[in-house]
Amino acid sequence: MRKSLTALILWFLFESIAVSLWLTMDNPFYLFNFSYIGTCLALGIFLYTKKLKYARNMVQFAVGLYMLFYLGIFSKENMQIEGFWYYLFLGVFEAAVIHYAVAKLFGPLFFGRGWCGYACWTAMVLDLLPYKIPDRPRKKLGFLRYITFALSLLFVTLLFLTGVPEKDKIIYRSFLIGNLLYYTAGILLAFLYRDNRAFCKYICPVTVFLKPASYFSLLRIKNDKTKCVSCGRCRKICPMNVDMTDNARRRRNGTECILCLQCIEECPHKALYLS
Image: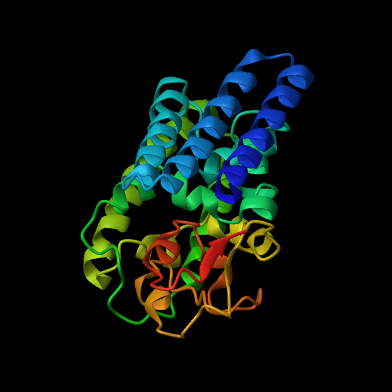
């Protein structure tokens, strides 16, 4: 019942955003957009509680393909971080700006980095690679994400400072090229470090937004100390190297949790739970 309630609360959160934006912006697109995403996410969590093996992957493709093809390629909205900077510089509160505000700036205060686990169109491909459980120590390469973050901001800043014509076409092409680079880098890093989520840990610039709010996330995986026998299974199978045995917000790699729930499923004594 508690697990189903989590899915219901998540759906209600997105539905509230959908209705609010629809009425505020007077655009029914936002009603459809956030209702669709919220329904997919809530349904995925619900199906996971029913032990459907590939529930999370189904949600990743349902949301990821929608974001990538419909919003990105067909509607020509740059949903990567360059699009956020571009629309922000234009002073336009729509498209990528709203997406980032909901999913990556304020949303993580509620659901942490759940976006990375259930809706990222880059991760939906990376999670299909063979290295679901990292078998090597985490590298000290997290500083690279701040470099890619700064480069994305610099790129858009130069577009405006140099006054190049047809910025909208350039920013659309950067979405296509950027996705190709992300997939290429993600796949290469996965095989190089034998870790599907290496790109997320070291390169992805979006995590610079996600990590601070994720620290205060209301929805977290917690450990029932009365059941835990410190077997270390959860630490071993976590794709993001999070120490789930520690309930403190300062736990190792705590802001990296993508709520994949793999640790809950693998815990032999059912000590872990989502709350």
